[in-house]
Length: 115
Ligand SMILES: [Cu+2]
Image 1 (cartoon, rainbow, N blue to C red):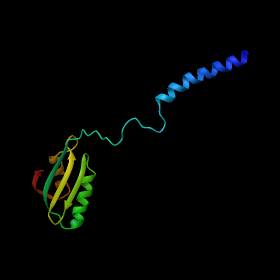
Image 2 (image 1 turned 180 degrees about the horizontal axis):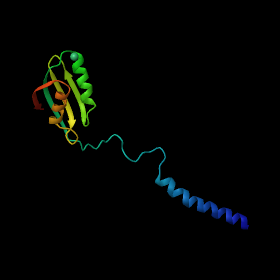
Image 3 (image 1 turned 120 degrees about the horizontal axis):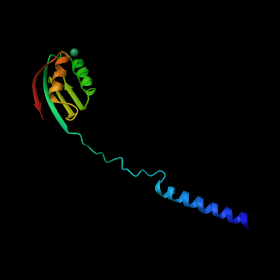
């Protein structure tokens, strides 16, 4: 009788402890929706007219370099058009810094246009 009572008590205690935990942490169900992206980024797009590129590889190289820069979301460099279209987070990057970067790569920026 005594042993049965204690066993029953332990089961109750176990139930009290386990149940709230079980309710608080649903297994396999993430409470935060992953698809909703909170964008605090101030997106800006700038277009450069670039001189000095001598082949398509120059454009590809410059494009890859742009993509490695902080805050750059999108980079497209067109050799034939002599143009670069860069989309960036204005909190981390600026058109002026991007322009200086182009110059530091050995090219000339003929025109900067915020689009
Ligand atoms: Cu080249």
